[in-house]
Image: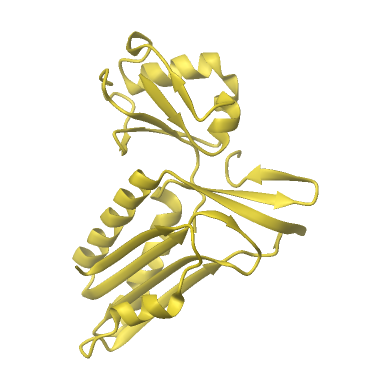
Length: 78
Length: 139
């Protein structure tokens, strides 16, 4: 499945998205652990959220194969 | 429709935002305009870039507007935000709120900009003479 990256996460992934296997990320918790292992720089961020289908998702939420995932680093609009 | 939500790659028109909320029943109109500052912590800002996760940003702005209209006796609300490259002095965001009386308009306008800064997926990259940073990314 496709994981969209924005802001500084694009720099960390060195790409605007990442394709990963659903078995590596069947919940938000798992996805974060998987990504942090692959990209330790994520742990240095002030915080980051996961959005599933354009909605902020909490840690224990399940991720399904067709979900659109986005990594949301600290926002700074306004 | 009581709310006007927009992400725009073009300059924002403050006057048209104000005109959109004006009505004979609205005795108070509150406006917040956020512009690009020319320095951050003493460093000169050359330009900045707003990256937007547009579909989600629109949804979050709509939620915010609905929340405002439920929470306060507000008539109309405009939330327009820029995307792309901006120079110091350019308008980054315009929020306009109309209500029968000023109290609701002031409070709702303040709440809108404060919440937008926390929840709407928009990212600011500031460019200095010696490099660039994504604002707020690191502690």
